[in-house]
Length: 225
Image (cartoon, rainbow, N blue to C red; front, side):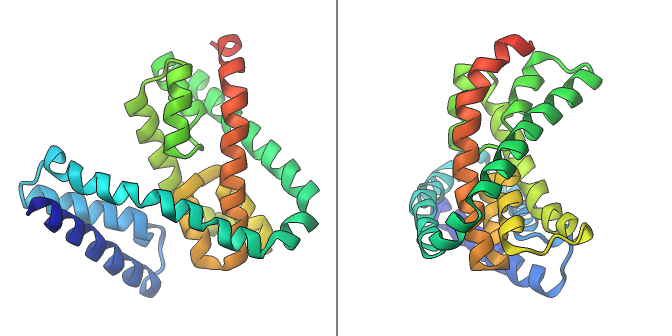
């Protein structure tokens, strides 16, 4: 009964957050952020523990697989556009991936963070399933990795489009590439809301960025610690 209630609650809150965010546009009304906040408050108010919520979470997380595969449809439909900007996309992905790693290292060193925090920060822009596997290879704290990845995605979804607007970056390809590279799946969901091209490019960028970091991080981490 709790599982059914939790699923219904999560879906209902997300639909409400989508509609509320469309009416009152703000970083704080980003659907992922707002719905997460509301669900936490309601679960605490209902005295439902995290462990009681876990079965519902697993069912909904399982559906991420088909949802991720579904991203291949807009990518295929826009394959000509992707081929047209292939060189620029590769350059952007490479620079974006390197920037995410270097920014994490600079922040960690400036604030004298321990390796326990530094390691998760280096893979904060990779989708959770990939990040946790890479984390095991580099002996990072999996719980921290998941937390940093989710926080990064939420911040990217909340502020990414607004930063792009601020710098007058309005090309659909550029917007999708930047959001997908930095904010993985959560950012890609936000890019899909902007348009099909943004969503397709963000989905492709998310996957390629994950591959790049998966190959790079395990080899460079020993030299950076």
